[in-house]
Length: 273
Image (cartoon, rainbow, N blue to C red; front, top):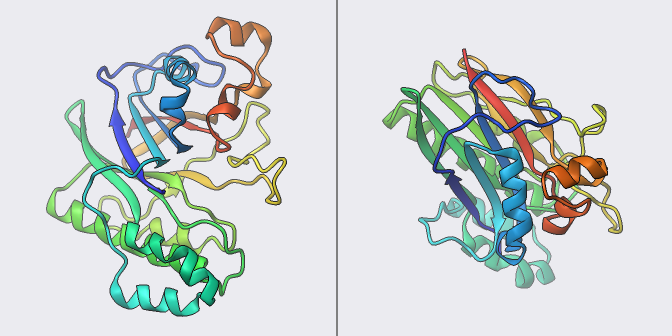
């Protein structure tokens, strides 16, 4: 079952020393991750060691199993009908319950050093690489609804910046991502995606498709308000390519990230402009 959950760590601290986060000046570190189930419970030690290494100020998790007990954002009824009409009969029987689960999104407004930051975590519909598929239509509907609610929230309760993260499942078109970038009311206007890489500085995939029919690709993103936030540093976290010394130093193993999820966590440190 898809779900989304938001959490903040008790203390707001600078990031622990790491290969990619070297700047010692204060910043806000956001870790977002499609955890793909209950790995944070089933593998508590590994999950804790990873969080200890990153020392994030804000943790955003999506595709958490089971569903969290929060108010649900529903698909509009007209859009729901269109999505169901586009499904073949076998898909209607198999996937109709996803519509009942609502849109997997959650968020909160966090106060940081006198500033207000709206953080949102989402998990859009997966699969369906055909632009005419019901899954792609559902992703676009979900992206529009998320954008609508973000607009509603910031008009009712103004914030200084927005971070919108999650698994956007861009297996067909980039339209869902474009929809979520905005536009929003000033001072936010449009959001942009943080440019993130693996440790090699070249690789950008966040979904590990090895051993599956689906290729490894970038499915997970962090969008942010460039008018008020800037990216100090950031990276895609993957322990598979760490040295033995680095793994031992942080009490991690080479397969830690692989064990916890096929998706890799995104780590971004933001500073206020």
